Image (cartoon, rainbow, N blue to C red; front, top):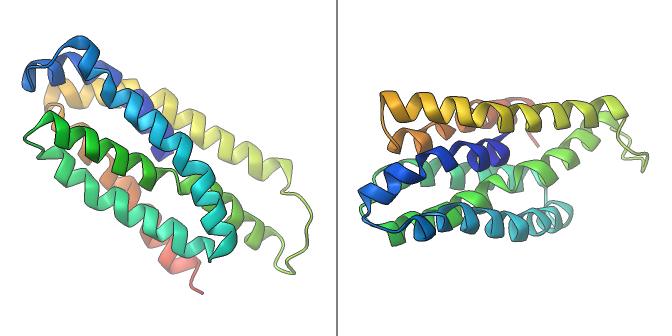
Length: 173
């Protein structure tokens, strides 16, 4: 849910970010572009790391990176720092899909067979991903008008904390 949420939540904040950092409309869209580019690199990289190492560790590392980058991004004083933190955030959130799929396989096939995931599991993953994308503009808009653009970064924290607790509780190695 984190990647689609962060992709769909930020476009509505661009005018506020443009004013805050005195940047052009074109420059402010780099906040979306760098997230997309880093995600495009991060997803296959996270998949490789999940296959090579324990997917629990890869997912936990991604959650930690995402969780730590959120308050730093929320307090960013420069546009350049915010761009770098969006890249960091994208790399952190990119671990969720490939490592999550690997963990679902481990849950479904405890005998480590090579059978594919059942369609119901894949449907649930698609549903959560689409839910994140659909909720992003509404959540982003609500946070933007009530608290301000910095809250959009902090919106990751409840999801990160819940996922981390679940991972540590249910997926102990």
